[in-house]
Amino acid sequence: MNENVKNKIIEELKNDKILKGLLGMSSSEIEIYFILIGNQMSVGDISELLGIERSSVYKCIKNLYRRKLVRRRKTQRVKGNGSRYVFNSVSLSNFKTLVEKNLDYWFGIIECLSLERKKDKLWRS
Image 1 (cartoon, rainbow, N blue to C red):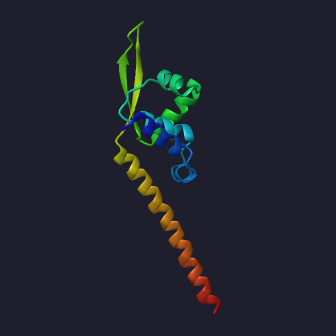
Image 2 (cartoon, one colour):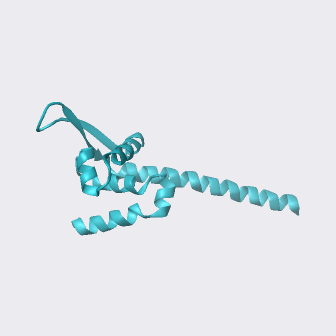
Image 3 (tube, rainbow, N blue to C red):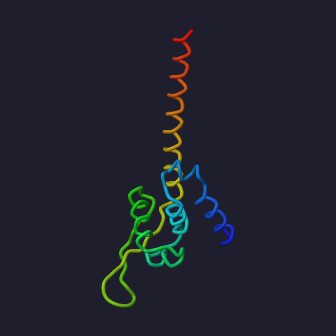
């Protein structure tokens, strides 16, 4: 996929109010998830790329990791001692499953409301 097309899609998805509301994700979480597809990046790399604070990236990564949408892997630092974590997105099928699960939940809620409304009408007549 052309990088410009991918960036346009990411921009549209991160601003989509329905997707944000449906998944309970912030714009940054959505953007980070899609940026990490096919890439392994550290929190510092993500922070630099998006121009947002590392603490905000850590929070987003933590939420994505909790939802099982990103994986982390420990790597050795090139310079200096120690190690660091790099992150990458799980497959789009996991993301799609999360969207479908949440849609099913909300459709169920709407169906329950619809049934309650029908019951109210029957009782009133």
